[in-house]
Image 1 (cartoon, rainbow, N blue to C red):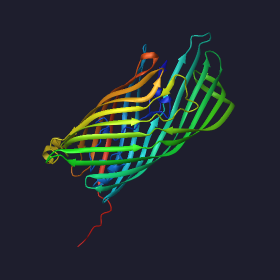
Image 2 (image 1 turned 135 degrees about the vertical axis):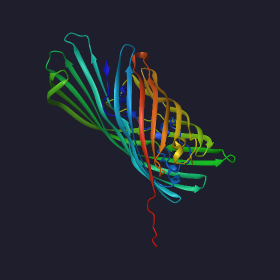
Image 3 (image 1 turned 90 degrees about the vertical axis):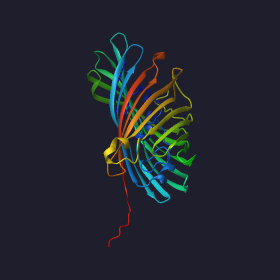
Image 4 (image 1 turned 90 degrees about the horizontal axis):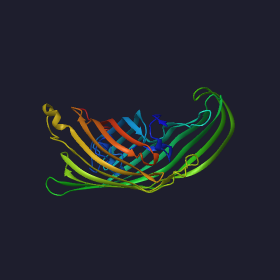
Length: 403
């Protein structure tokens, strides 16, 4: 069996549900393994809508990732590489009220698997898939008190997933193709609150709480069966459609509760922990159900933080103003294959480089981890990710006065 990169993910586990959920927060947050509990005034927090009202300047943020993954089973391994766009968002502060909006490629399906059977004639099959789901969001936040802010997002989810199965016998020109296409659409809501308070002259306590409601996702499924004529290998030059049928399946996006707590000295250092609990949901579609696969509640545990040597350092001591971030995580993804619960564990670290003369910054993140297992004939994924994000800050809507 061979599996390698295709589209935004290389994981064979992306076949199930709505694919591999890629979005784990901004680069700043991911560099701390998901921790983002401080009421930050220059970075946009995409995990909790209550964060928007803490911004002091209009903030534009964008991020992307380069990922290398080694996929291996008990007998072989392959390497996959991909580059992905992760998010684009804007936060607009307007006094105690603020709004945020953006676009996030939330999940990806992308793999190619070839199976060769030792039967007379050399029968082979190839399965591959592309697509995923994207989230467009709009939210608002209000600062109830200097220490407390609340907020809410509405998310519009949309996308398309296509899976193809080809059956081929060596030396025989004709074979078959099954194409499944799922067009996804739906809305869900996310609510949040953030609170921080002074413990003494230097230390502060930071907290973040958010809850995403279960959301309905309509999937318009088209199944297309065809006879094909192969030219070379799995390259086919002609298709004759034998049958096509369409139906609608209603899926359920799982609810998700996030709670984070941290302690530290603002703009100096912070150490925090976060727990994320998600319901089981119902994402099994007609084309990707399997007796080998089931689902469970998902959990993620993270510990991380940052350190800034001297936030107010002058130009001559630029390196003292760099933000150093690090974290560790452990996740039960909620997917069970052949009675094996698929888990994900990793470490991360990163740097935040300030742009001289402004509040903008460039953020770099690095993550190393392992997902899955080679037990029961499954695939283990050893991954390394390098991410870069821009957080650009400026003052908008200023009424200027002239003498």
